Picture 1 (cartoon, rainbow, N blue to C red):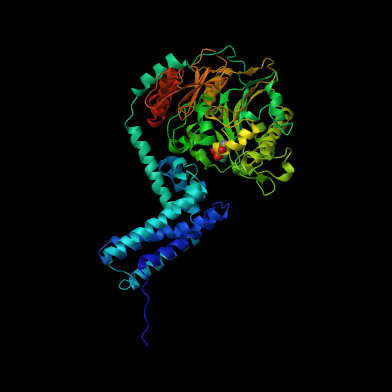
Picture 2: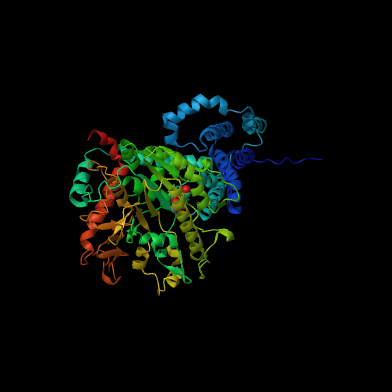
Length: 630
Ligand code: GP9
Ligand code: MN
């Protein structure tokens, strides 16, 4: 009887075999966290889609011998790429990026330890390559075909559908993954290691070309603008009152000002923070706006450390981590401070491991410094109360004076909390997000209160200035309906929405005694000069866009990354100029017509300021300045 042989195309066979290997590596060799079914599905599908599509390119190669060679060498090179990443991962728990590859310290670290990183069983990674090479030889007649034009088009359509399917699932699982590019592990998890490298190459080359075109002449106009318009070096009479004190900076996740001095079901939401508002040792800024964009927490860090604006798209922590900066930690170092960050998350999140080097942060106490277990974590990681408890011993061991930033996490979307940690009932509306926000905000309030007690007990309190800042909003416009209900408004207008971008900002100076509630407009851009001046550190030759908040002669507007702005009298959003206090509409800019409202005179300056800040970052202009020589 005649047996019919089924001729599976070689690219499919090879794609399947290589896909199995890649899946095993992603799932079981890299320690990629899988949080839900969707992620499980993506990480399963992606290796097969990627390898079948890649080996499938052979369809367009006419010569069968070359087709065969393409498949063989693709398998080999693909495996080498995976293997290099694996070696790098064993050393840095991170995936290779171009800047990391060219960072000489990384390479020398790797070369000295390479022998210890190689494991004998790594040879198994190459087993599929051997199988593919064998099959290529064995099936060189039956598995390789010359494809008709019709089949080529069909293959193209199928491949594009497969790829779009993968990217669509990734987009559903993590909206704006590629535009925000916030975490390498997420990128690899969603689009696989190969597309991640392509993505990295595209992003990095774009950045590098902008950098090449810049020169130091660009700085002359920027310096003039800062001197004339921003008057950024002006000091207040609080200059130096905190000389040589430690700075303990709490980055309070997602907390917005509307919860401060507000109630839910007759109960205060944030009793401790409320008590600070009128505390005599505290300045509370009630009109303080976050200015972050897609980089979220990392953008708030960027603003705080540099007093430069984050970028309109993507996360500057990710795209420009190799730039020269003149950040607060660097300036503090010149004044004998040690700078550290505490955050119980993986060190590559938001590319902190790279960016913190550029910002001159001496030590990052990341997740590995904490004891995180099933019992003490919730949502995005270690619970805040536990985080503060475990941070304290490290803090106590630091040489003083220090600048320590503590980044909390429990009050992060989707605002999960164990029943036992809940001390205020959720709100009751159609938005679960807003409902659950209140218990996690309250939890954070209690965690901070407890931390103050711990600082006192550890003897750190008296010698420190404690700053608390909401990093960015937690409740997006998607929940406007529920938010309007909570705030007892008919709707959330664009004016209300911009006002909701206010986040709490406290400067607590133990023993100061003359604190007050500050109503002037302020923002994250102002933190660097304010803090440095409190410590009595001169900023005359520095370049930044904020103002000392205790000085009255300031530039007079706070701008959001999308061009919306707030002045002492007006607020501009959605092409509309509002009275800041009352929220009344003063005038609307019609299309193409830009004049006529009291907001108009600010618009050019606002755009100019954002552009100058972007120019510094895109052109990496600080590489032309020797700040210390001044
Ligand atoms: C993660 C933390 C929270 O490390 O910074 O990230 P977010 O989503 O708020 O930027
Ligand atoms: Mn955040």
